[in-house]
Image 1 (cartoon, one colour):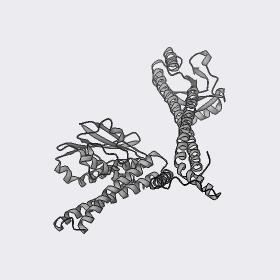
Image 2 (cartoon, rainbow, N blue to C red; image 1 turned 135 degrees about the vertical axis):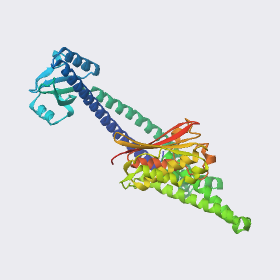
Image 3 (cartoon, rainbow, N blue to C red; image 1 turned 180 degrees about the vertical axis):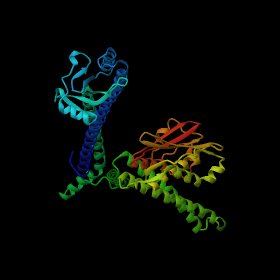
Length: 471
């Protein structure tokens, strides 16, 4: 096929897509392998710690590190977890092992220094070779029988890395297959699309080349309005494709266009009606109120769109300060006091201790507002809105739950999508844009946290924000 602007551009796009996908795939494989390796490291360390606790308990009963109970305990751990666990005395000699074949040489002075300094967790090549390292966890511990002096011992736990290598190889193979499939599909789509878009321009180029050589025997076959419109459409499609080369962005812009067009059409119609006298003076105030509402809706949409752009471009940076999340929730609930009273809704769970977190006060207030607004909007008359707060490990959480219609299984995965509204919400939520929950999730992710939704249809809906206690 003769190369032109379209083909050159799409080949460039194809190369860019291939390079991007390959890079992302490689990074994901490396990152996943790193996480998996860390998980295996932690697994060996946890087994070593549990084994040490059991050794200490057994020693309190038998007063011997080589008793029958110790041997049985050691054998059980070695066989059940598939790792090698050895105990060494304070001189570095191996005193407890799985069997004679597994008995290790004395600990090196370097290793003893490492264990004296604290926990050791790394790849170890002392037992095999650099080509076949093992995960090694080591630590020192003390045992005591009655009132006797505590005795000093070391533990070393070894585990094979074969499963890590297998996991990495599997990931690389899977990534290579996926990338190859994407390249083939993308190449086919780009090829077909470029040919279709280039067809009218190629026709013009072919005929004009003849004209340049003095051959006027053939007329341009796209001179009709319909053909010219098709040509313009092709050029517009190309421009749109250049500007938005992924499906999510295309859908996003389509939704924005629709959301902008609706209030602008309404405003234009009402204003024209007032200017040309179609709308009577007695009703003009009523229609001006509607125009004001539509303008506010446009302002909210534009602000939301700007925020969404900042989130996705990475230019939005949170200003972390210590805030009282409970106090933020209570103040926000008070903003909806009248609507809560109108629906005779009972509010529960606000009489709790303060929950302090590091977050951007304005951004987090926006998240809380969106969640409470949804709860108030969709709670059933006479229903309940309940809140809960707490800490779990290194995270804290805040939940808002409302009784009511809830979400179906089909609706649940889509609630955080931009411009998404459930079928049941369209009648209740005539002013909403479907951006609140999407923006809320972006904000929570900026805080290194996550937001979870749970719902049982015709019973309740619950949103939970989880944030790290320290940023």
